[in-house]
Image (cartoon, rainbow, N blue to C red; front, side, top):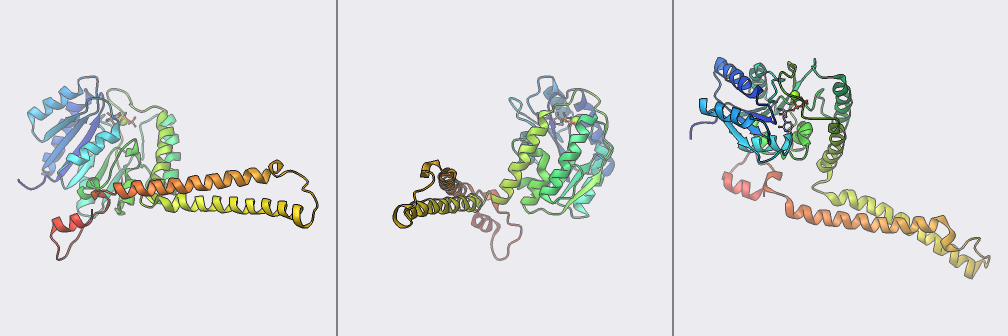
Length: 333
Ligand code: UDP
Ligand code: MG
């Protein structure tokens, strides 16, 4: 096979039939003007309009345009994930299909990956053409994500991003995690994360595909991602420690109850003011012990599952000495 293309452009699209032809022609112009070899991978995410036909028409006119079609709508993350698996280019660029991202940004992004050595470069829509109901919550989101992840980006959820190929091959984007790809990349060990101010344009055709529920889901996903990043490979450290704390608290409460009871019955002979079951501490002891055992068991089960599911993608071998590639990769499984 000939050498890999310079650039793979991945474009998820749901009901964007009007934008596809224009976007395709524009990308082709930019690539030719800069002398890049490229492939464009469209993912039709269960469109109900003629998006797929538009993709096929492009493919027939130019085989650098490729397309994948889902049988139903699986969401932007699923589309990106599928595109990432298929991409062959040295640099992988994602962009939205609605012409809000400009293909003119491609050369700048490409250079930041190839020449400046970034693992990932995220676009920053400094001047956004979106309603305030979207830009305001998004500022809040970005601030929280910056805090939690420690990544200094202004615009985590920008659809226009560039990656070195190894990055997209080693992350799994699912659910609605496309908002946090830089965080996923960081957890996977790709820390050279850059940012580039990009032009953001008005949506020319069609309507936005994301409503208010993006904020609720986005927040839950942020919790997941933080948790998974820190404890997915060692769940016992999380559940086990809290389980231990809870269990010990319960143990001391129980000891105290027992001691008071024994004391009143055998030593001081002063009857308890209240029955054991009338004391609040009795219920605290009960809950703490049960909770402790539950947490401990959860950690234990999670640990067993983790042992089974550590997959070949979890450890990335980037260099070897004295071992053939196949052997080194096998060893890391
Ligand atoms: N998209 C998708 N699947 C979905 C929702 C959106 O592939 O379930 C695509 C959509 O076609 C567009 C991109 O994701 O190319 C960004 O969506 P949109 O422009 O609606 O988001 P917004 O710009 O409003 O944040
Ligand atoms: Mg858009």
